[in-house]
Image 1 (tube, rainbow, N blue to C red):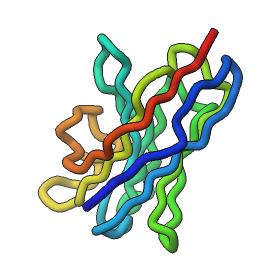
Image 2 (cartoon, rainbow, N blue to C red; image 1 turned 30 degrees about the vertical axis):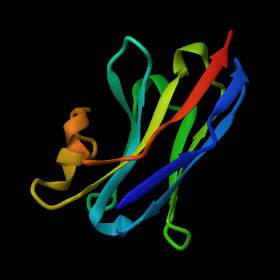
Image 3 (tube, one colour; image 1 turned 135 degrees about the horizontal axis):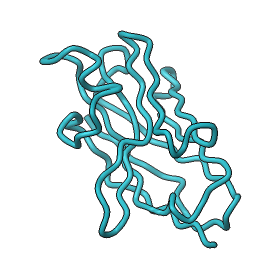
Image 4 (cartoon, rainbow, N blue to C red; image 1 turned 90 degrees about the horizontal axis):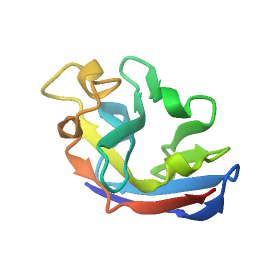
Length: 131
């Protein structure tokens, strides 16, 4: 399994970014997929995830209405569209995946937000939002 993010950058408050994640080595149907973020000095936060087995899409409260996750099976791509960005969204964003095998699918998504829910992580892409 390999996950490679791109699309991060520097934007002003209110701007938009579309993060991309090139996925390989697995299929989306039996994996939970999503995005986490980590700001310096803060905790890792689960931002969004998709669980197709239960048809669940989880979106963190603080980004609901502004962020959206999507996946393109044909291209093996996972996207995170981020609109109306705020300075508090500044962080390194990680694309994640976990095979739904040892636990029920809801363990992974929505899950509890623990980083151990996902065992495949990309290298991260930096997002900086200026005030």
